[in-house]
Image (tube, rainbow, N blue to C red; front, side, top):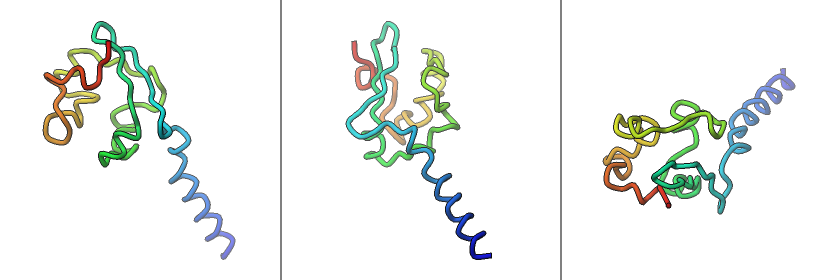
Length: 104
């Protein structure tokens, strides 16, 4: 019984921390092509410092694999993807703030 409890606890810890293997480490960014608007550099630390957690977006809003989703202008306007949080209430609005994320 004791071995089962220890094994269950170990498994639970492994599952809880598996996401850190995919996280953007401190001081690093993940760059995404931004088309005509310029690239977007996602900074995981900046989002974490603002109170966001990885599972707020992964895998519900964004899949874990880079390049698995192409964000279009229509999705920006519909509040999909980044707009899930960047709606002007939870985080700054996308509209009128292009240069906060897109760098030419």
